[in-house]
Amino acid sequence: MAYADGYVIPVPTANKAAYLEVAELAAAVFKDHGALSVVENWGDDIPDGKVTSFPLSVKCEPDETVVFSWITWPSRAARDAGLKSAMEDPRMAEMGPDAMPFDGKRMIFGGFETILDR
Image (cartoon, rainbow, N blue to C red):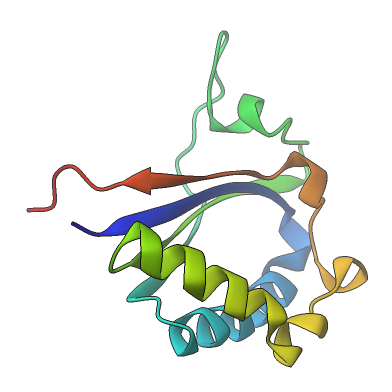
C-alpha cells in the first residue's frame, strides 16, 4: 500500500507565486527520487474554528493562506530512501531556509500509511 507525507503550511498570500515556484522545484526533486505524485492545494474555503481548524493549527495570520499538500510514495521504505536522497540533492540547497516564502516553524507535517485508496 502507498505511503504519504502530508503538510499544512501558512503562506503569506502575497507570496503565492514564490511558493508555487519553490513547490515546482521541490516536486521535480521528489519525483526524481521516487515520489509517485506531489499535490499542492491553495486554501480557498477554509473556515476558522473555535477549538480546532486548519488556520488555528498553523497560527494563520490574516494576510496568510493555508496550503494543504501531500507527496505519495510507493511505500514507507521508498519514502525513507527517497526523502533522504532528495534532501541530499543539490537542487534542494537552492531552497535553503532563506529561500522559503513561508514560516517553516509553523508547518505541520507527518508520514501516513495509506489504509484506503479508491
